[in-house]
Image (tube, rainbow, N blue to C red; front, top):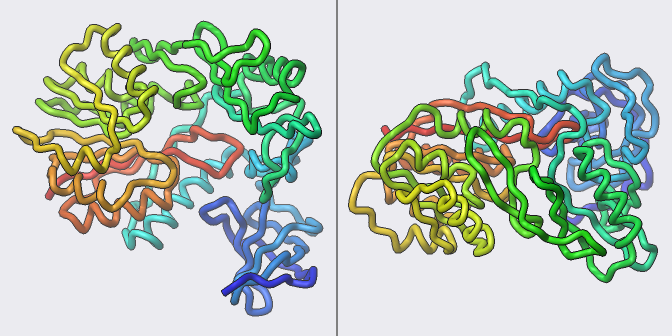
Length: 391
């Protein structure tokens, strides 16, 4: 059914709770309403922007009575910029909402009765935590920033409160030298040596940088992926690998080797698989510099590799950290055919995580632990580490 215009219908509603995607839930006049930028407990007057069946998508016109957990968003771009959608919440409320979102996804999508206690590790920094960014470019207007909420228009941004100071300085430099470049987006990432920028702008370039985390040195650049919140990396690595040891571990979607290196310290043999050739080269380099000869990295489509891999021994641990979209059915099929003793699934999207976990549980695994990490303060996104055990 196609959405229809709501003729700017206005309603007075109370926000019941926050849903996956960060929207507030309300009900009125037979409609289930999804309200943007809401806080649980808000009494608001909303404009229904569009209706699809019995679903309404609404925006706040007036806050009649603010929720006790509502705060004044400090960012002048809040509401227009599509980046941060939880700035209206206290940090404690943000953490609670993310745990509730995980519960919601597992119960609604995976049909799993979750334990009440899903621990969440707060970010050491609620602001100035983001060590990686992608800025959108409007070369006609010479604007640089992020997409406007719900559109592909660029919101021109001079200051971003979630960037680490080095990236904020880089944003200012890019605005000065590169806002008129003929490119649709610009990537930047911070390392211990400085900032890597892609594409090259003035004296800013896609140089290699590195980060020392838990005794491991990881090399990467703006042209490859690395986690954005470096303050939570030690805890994330520790939770994902735990105290597990054994003979063979497989690390799927291994990137530059964030988990591959510490796995190689605990297992006799480790195989990393990464689709992106550039990231795979960094992972091999990181293993070589760490003098870890018991691990290898394969550049391949993960599903194709699983379909052709025939292990000569039992897989003790299989770890995967896929993109936000989760994994394809052929990857699930490949995982189940390997029958690893343990599966650790690291995800930045509770909905796709719950979808994939449901299939793994149906394939003969039980849910052991679910732990959350607030890698993305001021947004509805949350990192989740799930451990599954073969039964």
